[in-house]
Length: 368
Image (cartoon, rainbow, N blue to C red; front, side, top):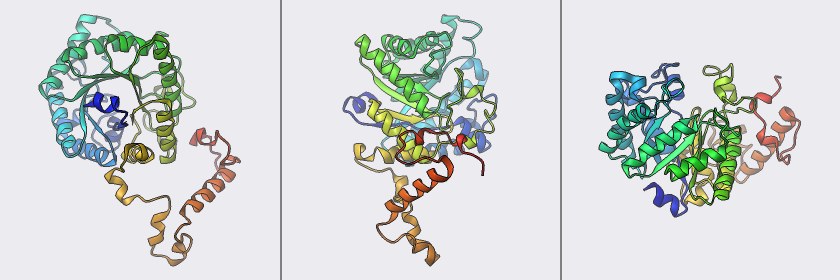
C-alpha cells in the first residue's frame, strides 16, 4: 500500500496531466474541464494511463477531477465508476496503486454549506469504496476549510488519505499560510500532505519547504507530496497560472524541459518529499525524467527508458556518417557539457557553474 511504501523510505512517482493533455488531443472540452472522456473516449484515457505507467508512475489516479454531482449532474456516477475501472485495469498491468481523487467543489465559493459539500464528497467516496481503490487523494483545494472537510470525509473510509492544495507561498485564498494549511490537514487525518497544480516546480518546492517547517514546529509527522505544473510560472500571482493571459491555450512556450524536471525531482527528494509527480502540463516524458533521476534511489529504470539512452547516445546509430563521427563512444557526456555551455553562452550569457541558470524560465530567453 501507499503508506507501507512511504514508511519504508521508497520513492512513489505520481502520474501527470490529464485534463490539459486530453484537451490537446481533442477529448476534453476546455472551460468545463470535466472528465466525461472516461465514458465517451475510454481508449484515450486508457492510453494516457498506460503511457504514465510505462514512464514510471507508481500511482494511477482516477480521472475524476471535477466529477462531483454539482459539476456533472446525472453523469457523475457513470463517470466515477468508469474512471475507477480504467485506472484499476492499467494499474494491474504493473505494480501501481489506484488513487481515488476528489477536488474542490463549485459550491464552496458561493454556499459554504458544510453538510451539503460533505454530501458531495461522500457520493464519490461511496464509488471509490465499492471499487476498492488503494488510497484517496483530496487535491486542488484553494481554501483550507474545504480541504479539511474533504479529508474528514475521506477518512471515513479507513483508507490512507493524501491531501494537496493548489496554493503558493502566499497561502490559500483567505491568507492561511502553507504551514497552517499543512497542520490543519494532518490534524484532520491526512497521512500525506503537499501541493499540486497552479504553480511551477520551483514555486511549488518553496511552498513545500514552508509546509515541512510548520509540521516540524508543530511536532506532527506526515509524508510530503508534490505534483507541480509542468510549466515555468515565475511571473504568476497568488492565483497561479489561471491569472496568466496564456492560460489555457498558449502555455507551450513555458513547458519545462526534461532537465528541469530532473532537477525538480532531485530537489524535491533532497527536501524530504517522497511522493513526487506532476499535474497540468506534465507529460509522460516528464514523469520518465522523474523516474530516471531517482533511479539510483528506486533501484530500477522504467520500461520507457529502454529506448532512452544517455544524452546523445542514440546519435551513434545515425544514418549519416558525419553525424555518427561527432559522437564516438565515451563522448556523450562531454558533448552534453559542451552543449550546455554553448546554450548558456548564447542564450543566457551565463556559465553552467552559475547556480541560478537552471532556474531561469524559458520565457526569459531573448528572441534571436
